[in-house]
Length: 352
Image 1 (cartoon, one colour):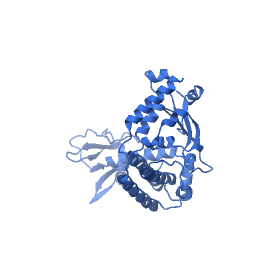
Image 2 (tube, rainbow, N blue to C red):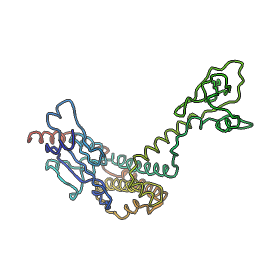
Image 3 (cartoon, helix red, strand yellow):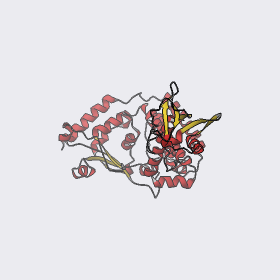
Image 4 (cartoon, one colour):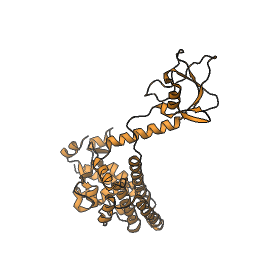
């Protein structure tokens, strides 16, 4: 099922501008994001294949099937609650039947976790970018040999330095396990014996063992920092996947303000925490933010990262206190949501 199919068959029952333009936080470079709700044709809904969501390739246009939309509302999902409470100015189309969905019957103390955890995930993303910028990973990938060390004198040296001092080649080395010593191996060297070498090639992810004749002399002990190598491989992949897929506009913004963190993530942290506090206090969701200048100042990098963390912690503490004293129900009224979901679908299908 495609977006084109939904439009051609008039299946879209809610379509809204979302993201920065709905929040009132758009700038000249902002994209237009679209979210909405569609209704599966009756035959498809009662058939074997349920389609919960339809989106374009970049996920900046997303439509949720009515059942999935209501399910996410019952979980107090922030994105879906925002969609339900989209400002009139950002609503492109809304079927009148959907007016029956009252967010006051849906909001609950779950919002503390859903909005709060979402906010904290934005801090984590900002931290992750800061780490990537401050600690870039070289393009040339290190191999297993870079994580091997050999005892030498009263200490140890890198394997590459050891081989250099000995004028040896890794291909002529043989390794055997040492009992009771994790990731430590006996190192042998012989150019006449066909040892397996330490690694097969630069793409190898582990060392190689060899069959060693009993009369051979052990030259040294080799330690392979396997955990360190695994960590490096993970960080290498994450870093270069990020470089390949990063949003260049956001990255250039980060570079321009020079604070080495994703300021847009931090802006959303404050937006989400403030919205959660409003839900706990007033039982309402204000999608369009009243403090545009402050939030855009965060986005432009006018604040130091540590200062933002401190301010976010204060908001988080306030959020915790607000929900502790709130008379919101612990969970949404599932019976109401379930009944309403049936009634809406039944009404739509009866009037096809």
